[in-house]
Length: 181
Image (cartoon, rainbow, N blue to C red; front, side):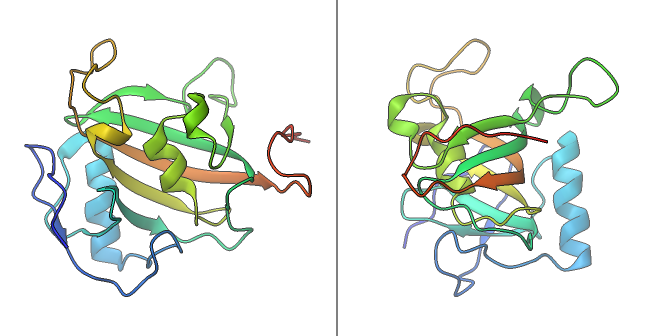
């Protein structure tokens, strides 16, 4: 299997974890967890973090494996995310007005074709468990593609730090409203 092209600032190594694609991968050992968290603070992706790579080029690593429900196609999920390009945060759900901070982002897993969610985020959340946190390296074709958006240039690889907050399963498929309470 060929490696997906990493962003120019990163030196990402790969290892076959034996995990099925999106089943949650594996938890980080404390030194790797520290290195990955440094990456989330904008210091670049460390060499010591080993990502699982899907056939579509999406790389993921579980910073924390959750213990709750598993996100599957048709699940209505609520996540917090931080999106970075070259180590610079360009979008986040964590910042907002008031004491509680930002508002979680909700979407239906498996519905990225409708354009309501970034395809890399959609694919990267599938298989996570509630309470989990995952670092994603999203190739251009699963991010903003050849057009780019605002300050993100065409063909840019982005990084997403995603925390799965809640899941609402629908017996009727997708389109269930997320009710917090």
